[in-house]
Image 1 (spheres, rainbow, N blue to C red):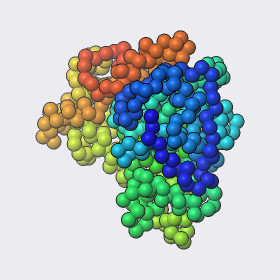
Image 2: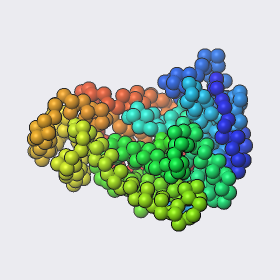
Image 3: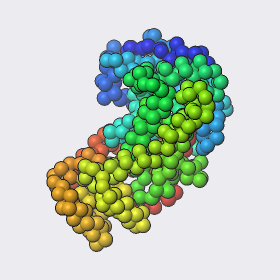
Image 4: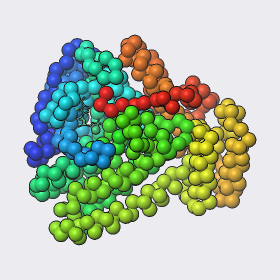
Length: 479
Ligand code: AMP
Ligand code: MG
């Protein structure tokens, strides 16, 4: 089915461990992503459902697969740890039209990096990753995707007792900031250099010609990560655990653990049960990514310059650009949400005071921008006179800038989703799917989330959040 190559396992053996998935009992296929399968050019017609379940649970091996667990380290909540794929196994790299995709099983059993973990994941958390990654993808944001979910008859214990499941994760690679931290920790410059060359060739081949490829690499990753965070902020996404091991070199979202979407606008919003200090809160995401980029630069210092003091200086100069680069992209994003092509001071001031207004009145982030675009929603959302004032001010601003109304609406429609995964709906759908074995709500929600920018009659079922739900809502890691 796959056109597998295994270039990562040709690197230094210090960077991975060969390990096979641990077989499971009675695997059955619960999700198959037809759209992704088509994009990958997979021909599955020759396989029946049971064979697919066997293959995508790891019970049966794919041709030309060399299963490995990748080693990596990571700063988790600011603390350095040696980690690695504790519950995922890379089966191989599927090559299609010169594009290379890692194909990973997640929840496929213990590896040498499992520490105290069981190497497994619950059906609800694998379905959660499937749903959320599909939502982020459909919102046009760089992300890993999910090809399959296979349920097993094995029982595991988390917040609740559940069947385990295995997700197939597809991404342009799983190289992380933490992979470089691990290579640096090995204290073997050869390995660090081999890894950097590999990453550059795989993701940013033009950087090989640069005068200082290591520095150019950090700069490129930094830009990719800024784009990603700005996109997350555009739609109200909170990753929840943006440790350096979850921060990709490709700039794609990975690791859908405790992530969630913000309903009422509040930069301090955090749902992850373990993030008591709000390190990964919605509004803290840029600062965290900046910090992660300093970890990447730190790991690559020996390759940036042979003299450490010079390397630090060069890295520092680059990292100092982060706030300015972020600000420019963030402000452009806010302007787009308001229907302006380019940011200027008056638009940015408007955007920021509008956001403050949303925070003060705990208004829904997604719907507030929809109501700016569509007057009818002011009544539907029970917004008051104050909100009308913002619409009027926006119109004035538009007139001042001589913005064409249709163009503004078009830009707003492209940047402001109608539908995001509302927390209460996600939980309801996962409960039904995992504990009542009824996929109806899950599939209905998934279908809605695949067309997030569609404008139709306001649908309060999918477009509003109960006001009391989020205050007690918690999400979890490693489930
Ligand atoms: P995460 O919070 O998902 O980024 O995971 C952090 C680390 O914990 C990674 O090394 C994971 O592979 C590992 N991990 C998470 N859950 C498990 C589990 N159930 N069994 C083994 N390792 C796990
Ligand atoms: Mg992780």
